[in-house]
Image (cartoon, rainbow, N blue to C red; front, top):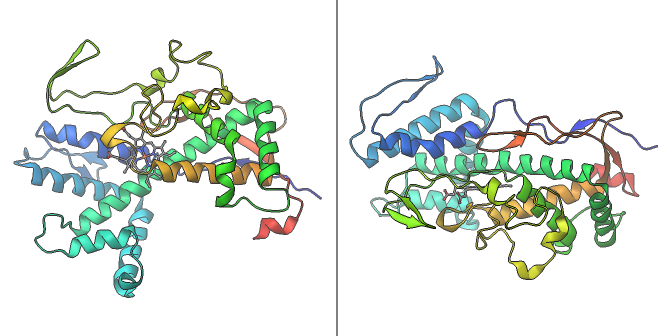
Length: 336
Ligand code: HEM
């Protein structure tokens, strides 16, 4: 007999991960004002310190605050980082395998070299990756699920595609992902309507310039409003409608590379999301698995609504709640 359970599509810790992003993003500009406000764990407040003399002092201060905040908000992230580092150092894995962490640790060993980095910088980079990649991904999974449960025709097409390419007697594998074109368009149009970082990361030009007739003074903070670009009626037909088919035209260059400025959910240029290809794959994989293995319905008598909870990462104001029912032909697949 099929068993149904009600679940939150995504359950995240109550503390919003975007706090760390705010710190990472805005600290540089705060520090440029020469006053530093370090975070006091006991009082949970920022306290005033002396102006910082040079860039090295600012970098150290950024890491001090980042580490303190990590301790306070995400102790498990730090424990995880420390574990990974000690595991790599302790077991002689260095010689056998060269993964990202190992490369970072090797850079740390080059005494005096220009590329040498400290263990604190290694930790900061790994924390960046863990933090930058978690809240964004889970938020997007939730938005896609909500859009699909609202547009049953699109859900039907996704399910048909999954049944054709994966089949009901197997689980989704990485090799299936390139074949799931319709799911890809669903994710893309969800990114258009609900970009996870609607203002990207702010820019600070090192030279004054004029762009599109606007004078941008050196040193100012520039926020790009991607949310508005993605809903601009001059660019998009029926911009407020969820229409995945608009991405079926392959000649439109509407991918995640940031080369078409009409569509930049992962940003563009030198500061484009550092791991957008990984994010693209993870999203496809998570969503394909959820949608292939279960049939999703709203709890009886409830309706979806799509208000934003504005933030650095823009989530749904009201979490999506859905009821999954197993749909695979062989129940043992769920225990794998
Ligand atoms: C759905 C998932 C994700 C979304 C929507 C997303 C979005 C973004 C955006 C919009 C930016 C700013 C780009 C700009 O201002 O031009 C960014 C930056 C960044 N992302 Fe992602 N991201 C995601 C997943 C990830 C993952 C999985 C990682 C790492 C494993 C990651 C690491 C980073 C880092 C390190 C930066 C800063 C890059 C820099 O400033 O040079 N992100 N991301």
